[in-house]
Length: 156
Image: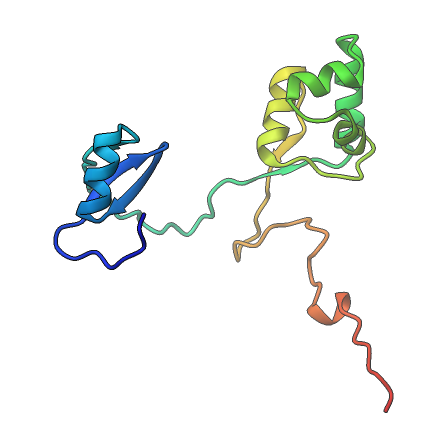
């Protein structure tokens, strides 16, 4: 607190909810005034880490289906909900839901799972892998860096 170099044993204290390391003078001063509490001792648990065997098959991954926006809209309308109601249940903004339904924005996998659960629809599917373990059907298959970058050169 005072900014001076801590000489001797440092003290840990909770000051206004923040854990701080203090010199003996600041610690005693704050403890007497009641502005600080002794910081609780933290026990660090060590867990035994098991090695995961590397398998030749990739882990199952999920991707969002094509036409997900239409599926979400149909599921929402089947329940008789407005976009505002569904957005509230998903805890996202109505504007974000509109962008998702119009497929301007893809929902995250967590949000997609939540949508599936609430609307009782399927918008996630497992990613299919080929023999080399690469995903099939991706719109980025065989795309190189040169395909997506435009280099602007200033003329001297």
